[in-house]
Image (cartoon, rainbow over all chains, first blue to last red; front, side, top):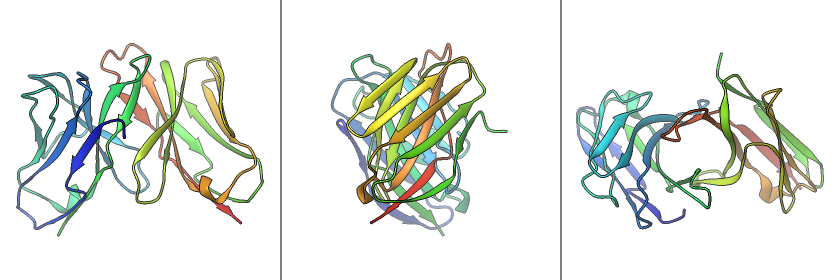
Length: 113
Length: 111
C-alpha cells in the first residue's frame, strides 16, 4: 500500500455517534484523498488535500469533515453518523515515478446501525 | 450516463482463457488507470497510461485516445486473477489529480 496506513480496519457505529478515520503516509507527499466505495458504485471522492493546511471538497462531502495539520496525516471525521455513511473508505496519495499515480490505503469498513 | 463505463460488469472464465475487460469514457483525459481489488482487500494500481500499450507479465493494457476506449487483457488466466478490475480516468486539466472511477468488472476465474 505504498506507505499509506488506515485505522481502524473495521468499525460499527450507532446512528448519531461520531468517529475519526485515520490516514497516515510516510512518504512526505502533498496530495491526499478520501474516497468511499459503495456496492455497485464507483469510488467517490469525499475530500482531498494538496498540502498541509489546504483541503477541499470532492463529490460527496456532506456529513464529513477533514483536517490536514501535517503532511503525514489526513483524518476524516464523521460527526453524526447516518446509515447512508455505511461504506468502505479508502485514503489515497498521489505518488509514483511520474507523480501521477495513486496509491491506496487498505481501507476502513464502516457500518452504521 | 456515467462518465466512465466498464464492460462487462461480471465475467466468469475458465483457467487459461484470454480475458478482455473494456472501459469507455466520455471526458477529455490526461491519463487512464487500471486498478485491481481483491475481495476484502485493498486497491492496487496495475497500469497508468496516456497512449498506446503497456505490458506487465500476463497483463496488457491498451488505450485509444481518439475512440476514448481502453482495454485490459489477461493472458493465460489463473484463479488468482479473480478480483474486481477498476478503470479510472484523470480528467484533463485536473491539477489536483482527481480521478473518475468506473463501477468495476468482477472477474471470477474457475480452475
